[in-house]
Image (spheres, rainbow, N blue to C red):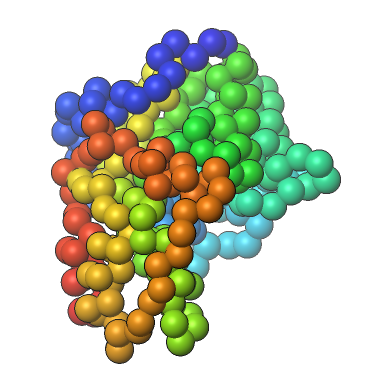
Length: 285
């Protein structure tokens, strides 16, 4: 199956509000399966699906901490338990992600290949894959693995939609924590990012579930593109004490790609929580 409109296109998604039909106590048989439901995006998405009256089945190697409509033990790397979990499902939302390699292949490729095969055998109507803005331009091995997984899906006979997102607020927050874990921070100040709230991406995924397969790839990003020095300046306001940091130069093709903004999509920014709003909410708990 050829990808008809690969490229940016979340202007189409953002043109319509996400329907919110709430069924307080209704529990339908699971018709949406979510991989990686315990991550930042999954914890925002699963409650939205349930609130909309959609039956949800989660799969993982270990049970989720929260109560779920249905959960199945599945190992995406080996495929154990996958076919049974997918049988009877109409839509699969693939969030599970891992930078590891299994032999010479990436987890991303192996998991996608197994998922496509299981979905095709089960007659799944729609496979939604969440990827990252810039996977087609940034020469990072993990990004290349995500791009390879996208291509496996695009070339398959499985009806699909691919949604690429920029980095989540929480991910950037954690990365800054790593840069400042020593007495003096070492910060690539000239890199840029476009932080986005997982809640906004979850809203778009709920909309895609209701839309059905679009056979396309869409980009979406947060409301502002910021240099890392700006991110750091605001982040430091909420830390127990401010640390001195040294700007480090842009070295290598990967850093140049992030400095050039290839990980952003300002033309497809979604009005949502700003970096400053995230910090205030996160650190005022």
